[in-house]
Image 1 (cartoon, rainbow, N blue to C red):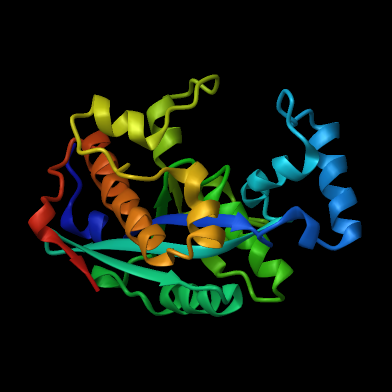
Image 2 (cartoon, rainbow, N blue to C red; image 1 turned 45 degrees about the horizontal axis):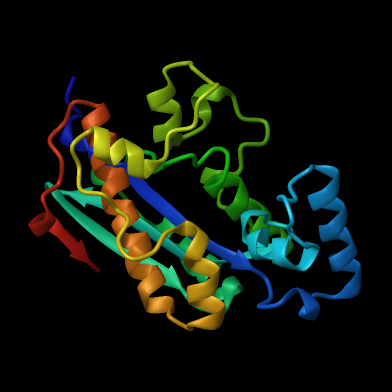
Length: 239
């Protein structure tokens, strides 16, 4: 059943990009180096023939060792997808800007805002909340699930929708786009390359564009799952 305009307009589609907190493992404070080694070895995350310093390239996957450099949101108004990005080296500032957006965003009819992300319940939502706490910021009410009943949690996850109760499998956004006949969000980079583009190449603008493409694809994957009409490229606006 197709969504009503009101139902579509109260959803904020979201994606984040994260990197290790520092460019090189040798720059990490010694206590945190030991804690990283403990985590990577105890959880058996070290790959074959990989050293501890080499493994630090994946530290951005963990909120305790990484940081957010980009949050992109998208919201639908009158069949147009508006894209807005919060990005930069100052994580505190971008988190504040994102939080202010959530507080001030008023969808059609003043309905409660919902967030939608791919694998958001396992990654994006808890990552943002943890980084808010680490940076001594107030968690937006939308992301604070403490004490809430399941039906009070306004967080949508397209991966969860696609699983239909099958919790064994992981399906990437890229794969979902392909099988649903949607343009792939991946161009000349993927998530594993974000740290290199940020720390070595200093190309934050390219990372933001990559994240924006993901949000467009995320939106259309959600609409396809719901049997709705997808957003055409000419109806995407970068605010």
